[in-house]
Image 1 (cartoon, rainbow, N blue to C red):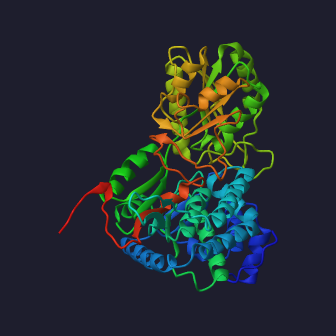
Image 2: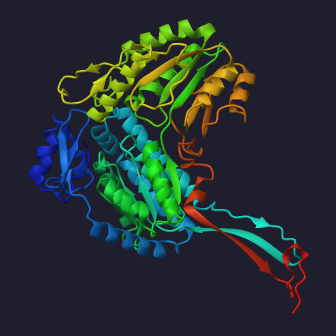
Image 3: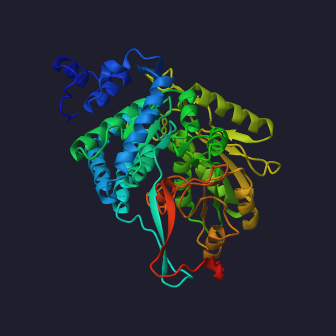
Length: 525
């Protein structure tokens, strides 16, 4: 690994780490040291960190106390008051520098993502590329925080709309996208003039520390215009997350996680009249029509269902296949599922890495048992032992053929489980696509323009994302990412999502010599 020797460790220890990368712990140390993180700080904390790759302990971090959180939030408020006064294009320069630093550290951070979250290395690299892309997007956005000029009904009056920073932004992220979700929020929040406080998942704090270290590099190059504590991390579990959720100093909480988590966060923030951006669970469906390109649909289905070992909010969970193509499509799908390479995510041939932990495995097995008990036929889904990783939880992706008596699956299992259903009528398939509490992503494969247009119309998919001839998984920077219903309604990473990080001010300016009232009201004194 061609990285400069960090100044915080001696020559001997660096050379030892560099040449001894046989274990997950050693490879993690290489990545962290390359980013200048003090390895000694990860030795005696009270939270043990396990790699899903082989179950090895990667380190131990110290959780933040109540007093720590109090200090962090106070510091964030002070940083915001200074940062908001910088012109937005100047704030964009910091995000540009962050993008450059991410380009320089792409492989190191990508590997760290793999080691800590278990996704294959290509997906780890892809996640870092998402970070780079949102930085590029946000830099351009820093010169496009446009308001409106509005016609007034009163003579010699003008109305205008201004957008202002909202304040310190609290970011709560999940293990499955340990860095991209932060960047979606951080890049936009920073160019909008806000400070940021980040609570990463307790399962993936090392990548968070790495991101902060990379941002610190950018801040150092940016110069003294950046206030101290512009970006801070809070380490811990739900208790510290709850402190953030309930604190008035964070007017906006952007939280990514399960629907259950969102149902706790939303009312608490609402009770203090705060705002939320919620990116919660998905139970995503895809419809395979008679005219579909079945080869293309198969590729999309496999990536959507097994990518990140089925641990994406956009994972394809349900498949509605037309009677006319069901048998041929499912036969081909079974063959691909049986051949997909499950193994160590650091190996180039691997397509499916491990589940995050035993709890995820147990929930998967429980879901498969429930389906069997209701008459479904299950293919795959069993645990796979990977040499050298016997303590981790690797599984063969599961296909579940549902009987006619089970027309849908309303619960999401965060694992590579794909439920197969027959359909005969497109409107019925669309209705079943919509008939779940979640509303994140959806897709249809068809070469019939009428079917495509119907699916994307107001009577089609009710999801925040509705794709044609492309799968449910794989968000692209530029489009507003998010979903409806129990998915939370939040939008991040594109379109006008930036408005969620700002407050709107409508101004009426009177340049006349009179004071006419709106609606023609007469009021004389």
